Image 1 (spheres, rainbow over the protein chains, first blue to last red):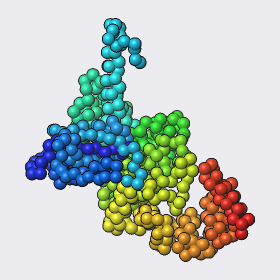
Image 2: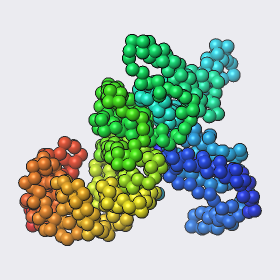
Image 3: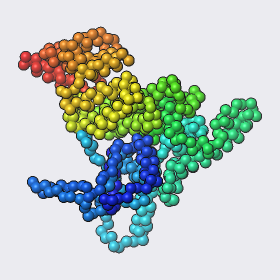
Length: 115
Length: 446
């Protein structure tokens, strides 16, 4: 199955301090392990919500809303697309990630044709 | 089960609930352990095989560690580094085993028997922590050793590298569990009797042995891919398993172009999984597929893998060539935009590399698309006398297609009927019978 892992790391500021080199190295090591296990299909980091836009739909009306947005805990800072054999396998991998804060959400992609 | 009142709870109800809570925790732990096993088992068995020398013993040791985890983790909790825990536990048992074997061998020695194993069992601790990648590779080469039959290689690979149970493998291949169990037991024995060593071959031997590995992975993929029947949910899992093994191998031996060629081929073929079966389970042929249903993520990955194979100088490898043909279809936004002349050229290359009547038939189809049905038919007609294609249903099917395009409906009809009588696949037979019926209708109209 294919799952999307959403990294909700909490407050994100425009002038976010770059991650410590050790943290980066740890993350890279973890990501490499995932790639070597044939798990990673794709991954990306998102720019801060202050640079993001939202489009709200109300009937025929479309309203564009500029970031940043208030609900910092729900803001997605990055994502992974994984190929795993079960949700449990995804959870086991995720638990090994070298993070010390934030919430990570795992969602199965129920249909992925024509993505 | 919802009781009439939740506020009045007898002690026995509470006890039952508590027992249930423990059961839930145990069930959760078991699910976690199963997932961890899937992640760790190949590395575990690989490291142990290098140490003890044979897959059978290594698998037993790994299973012992799994049993220990199932006993301990539900109460102790999953350790922080579960892989290291499993390896440590298995290592202990290995040490015990070696000690016992050494004692046994000393006794044999007294009887004048040889003690080959002595060298293998030294320095257990040091050897087990070495490069995991090389271990995995060693296990792949061993499980796919040419001394084993194709069936044995496939079963053993899925078992020790895929972490699949015997039951899962049996379900995937639609054979009895006992057959798979037997295949695996016999495979281990054969490896043992042939004194197959745990090693990563180098040079020319590596290229030859790699061919055997790629063949196994592609067999697994095709077993899943050719099963288009609707009710089968297990078999797409075989495609995913093969893709996973291919992706892992591509990371282990990144400089081998054919590995990337095979991965490219599988990624591109897998991209069509959602488009090649209709709502009632009927197969939809490549040119009739709704290309919006193709998985473009897999296509992108496939094209990237193909590029990697070509950059490594492997454009003319058998898998890379097949991937290049698949890529021609993947790149075309509509069937009409397919670059058929290029596909003909690629089939020319395939035919030079590994000439076969089936390749000639595929080439004839491409020629028919690129240069008109008459040109294609000439090539197919030349194959009619080919003995190896006498019972091959796709020969009359292709011939029928070309004849139909040339307006020769009556001949086309009898070809489709012949093709239908030759295929063993029920769904495919229906499709061919429908074509025959369409030709009959066209014949009347004309």
